[in-house]
Length: 353
Ligand code: NAD
Ligand code: ZN
Ligand code: ZN
Image 1 (cartoon, protein in one colour):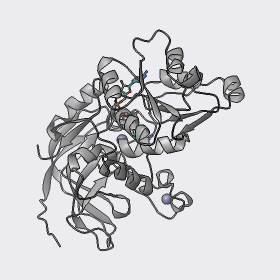
Image 2 (cartoon, rainbow, N blue to C red):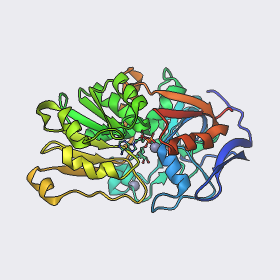
Image 3 (cartoon, rainbow, N blue to C red):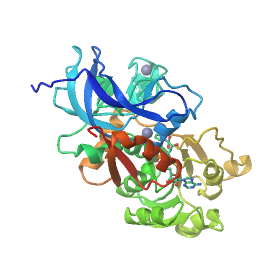
Image 4 (cartoon, rainbow, N blue to C red):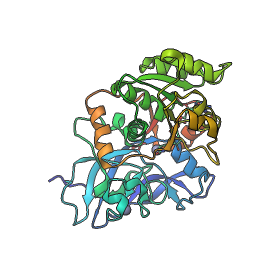
């Protein structure tokens, strides 16, 4: 078995107070508990959730000081005594669900994201914007050795979440799905998972660059919310018979598209909420929802099985994440671009610089 020299201190990006910014500094390396592994995080994707966490956007408080990050791909370098199914040297991923009780009725039925005692990476426990991070062994993603750690990192939240959301939508091969926020991190992955699942895609986002990315990744049509004179009609016109998409995946970080989706979704279609804009409400006309039999639901990350399935799509080459890599030290700059909506795809941070 491989052995690793583990330093007592490491580089990390730390949120000291809600609202940020992050500060790049040295902090101690944690030791794994009996049912935990210590992962040398090589690369971590930067999800919009990390920005929400730093800004205190949501009703649940974060731990403070906080190390964010929950798309961390790396190598198992230490483990607790109870961990028997992971070896030192294995490649593994830390995702949003850092751990759960495994004993409640949600955990028993593979709904572990709903566990009342769930631990959340980069929110209630320290996450992957550090060189060494701890997670419950039962929950870390098993990453096959032939997967590139840099390219696979964004699958660990964005990939899992949109793959699960597409399953929750009930859309079947041959049907059409609208992806709202299709040029962002989750969106770029959603377009590809949808295509790989045999769905037609209408991408919705703002600006020409995001449109080009949608088309390049296989969307049949792109609707630009910034320039469209009538978004609802344009989305419907891009679907068979002009009746609207069978499903809508809402990944955008603003409230407006949540209010529009039930207007263009096809009758008997489903609207799946995934994006989490601060303080937003979902509003839909009762009359239309009833007489057009529309399903409205939420979808929240994925379970361990969804994780391995989402990784399998990556390993088979069906999804590739458009990403740019910068040093962990540049995280605050990434947040700035993210806030301005300027990121196409994902930023990945390299923890070695
Ligand atoms: P991102 O910033 O990379 O992408 C968001 C995209 O939405 C951008 O491309 C932006 O241009 C687009 N957008 C903004 N307003 C729009 C509008 N009116 N119409 C269409 N598109 C619009 O963010 P991300 O990392 O992909 O995350 C998206 C959201 O999903 C965040 O709120 C994040 O917290 C949430 N999230 C939820 C889960 C879950 O389990 N439900 C998991 C991960 C992330
Ligand atoms: Zn995320
Ligand atoms: Zn539980």
